Length: 161
Image (cartoon, rainbow, N blue to C red; front, side, top):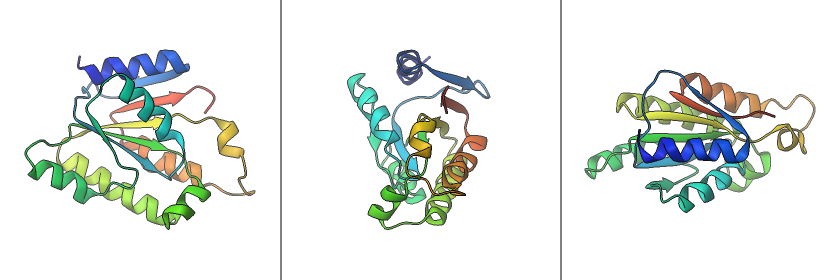
């Protein structure tokens, strides 16, 4: 197993999350940490990964072009970590809509699969953040989850989520 798998398992143990290995593929470095929904969740994972010395880039609005550019540089990403969870405030600050995020994530996942990059879906925020400030009928969190999780090789899941 590679350092990134051990690190993610440590993160899971420390934070009371579950990890599901969907197809026994391994996650390796370098990784890229992104968001699908511009929620604050990636910051928690970013801090943990930095402390453990994992080789990764942090780019919330990464695109398929970023994966291609890294491949062309000769040091392609081997793992894509996508944190799910929508934040209307975060998307507003980034100038994007839910549909923009879903389309960007769909293209990012398609390119990752094309390059055989391991995809880790991270649902690491619980109901407290999900329901905070959400309008009745707002299903943007679920849309983010549905866009990422079925396409992941591994999943980090907060039990309360």
